[in-house]
Amino acid sequence: MSHTDRAGLALVAALVATTMIITTSAQAQGAQSQESAYRLVEGWAQLPDGVEAWGQTIGVEIDSDGNLWVFHRCFSTSCNAGREDVTPVLK
Image (cartoon, rainbow, N blue to C red; front, side, top):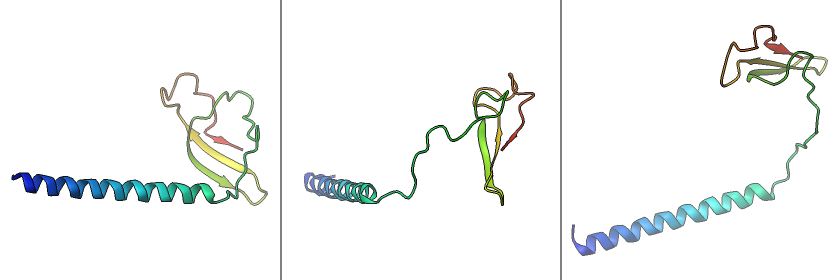
């Protein structure tokens, strides 16, 4: 590859990188300027007695009465240790 070819390739790579940075920056600014329709509610989820932590959440549903049902399983490190009597469905 000649010196001219390498210089041209470097120029194209620099233009692509600059375009990607500008695009990413513009997207980030747009995301920050949008107001969220959601708000944080501290302590809203109370686990039932005997359940010390969430497992891997595999499903979430809201019933007609507005109750939240969570289907969860295993912790990331173990599926059995201390989880034999924990229900996989939480209300």
